[in-house]
Length: 98
Ligand SMILES: Cc1cc2nc3c(=O)[nH]c(=O)nc-3n(C[C@H](O)[C@H](O)[C@H](O)COP(=O)(O)OP(=O)(O)OC[C@H]3O[C@@H](n4cnc5c(N)ncnc54)[C@H](O)[C@@H]3O)c2cc1C
Image 1 (tube, rainbow, N blue to C red):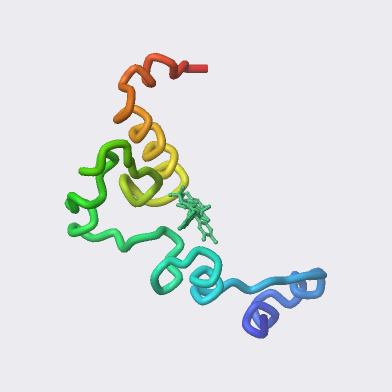
Image 2 (cartoon, helix red, strand yellow; image 1 turned 120 degrees about the vertical axis):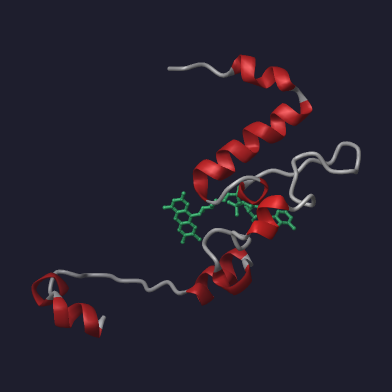
């Protein structure tokens, strides 16, 4: 806040509430390693890992979310779609372009 006030003094006067989030805050809320916003580290190992596939060797156990596809909300969204499609590929037939 000191730095913000230094660079933006007129904006700083207008602030009525502020909350500071750090990787420690993210770690305590999400449990992600080192407070990463986007889950697992995005490394070649992650992308090519056989452990991060929708279908698992356990019958009836599927994985979904950002960690099986790509980081962020779009990645989590498509992770969900692809997990559903791993169970029933006809799920794509139900998707409509609006
Ligand atoms: C502060 C912050 C800001 C972000 N801003 C953006 C942004 O602007 N744009 C963007 O694209 N992405 C953003 N992200 C990333 C985005 O939130 C994630 O990519 C997305 O939420 C991942 O979705 P997910 O379904 O894979 O996992 P999550 O949303 O993490 O869902 C996992 C769920 O599983 C639950 N869970 C965990 N362990 C267990 C267990 N053992 N038993 C039962 N339930 C469990 C958790 O409580 C949680 O509800 C942000 C993330 C953070 C932390």
